[in-house]
Length: 321
Image (tube, rainbow, N blue to C red; front, side, top):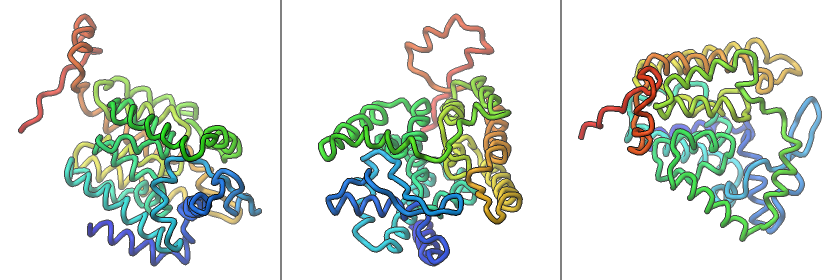
């Protein structure tokens, strides 16, 4: 709660400079829906390439369900509440499941995600608390990447049920959403970028959920500017690993700001190599330091019995009570 309150207060104080950041768009489109208008028609005015353009809604309809409570209050209040609530939920999940990962809250990904009012803190929370897995659909690219790490009925079946339920509110939203996606600014796929193929080395640790997460993240389109990469902090299993990944990412972020934050420059669209080097590469190195061990269903273990030992890995030790 303390972490959520601090983040909420900072979001409130920084509002004159951030103007609500990405959350302002979510707030705008959610208000349109609550007012009975089509949230996928029209757009939020945003400055892009020295001119103002209407930015359409790029998220699936279920995102509006979660945004609705924050859209009934003024933008500044909703921004502070959303940033604070999502941060508190993530912090609670970390402290309950793996407190050694708490340093991730000092990394560039969390700072930017919370400051922008983005969805990745919530999606990361669903990986720590699988009972909330169905909520990952609100950010479909990162949500899809979370499935190999947690291919549970709740995440897949619950997410599908939420999507089907949303059709009752606006049956044509999938076609409108896909139409809007065609105008979305570039979201590269890391594995297709120079050096991105190195992420496939994570398959050497394929038994580990975090290895499957890293490979899947490298295969989905994303904005390579730290915030979308927050789930990769789950690769860090120890406090030292979490501190190292956060520290390296902060250095990478500062380099991005110094090198690209110039008149007319847009660091969020030109930091691909910096994010690969400052987040993906250290996450991969941390992962490869661990052995290929992890629990799999019994029927899968039986099928793997004939594989070479170096490829098969080994089942994880049972967790201590």
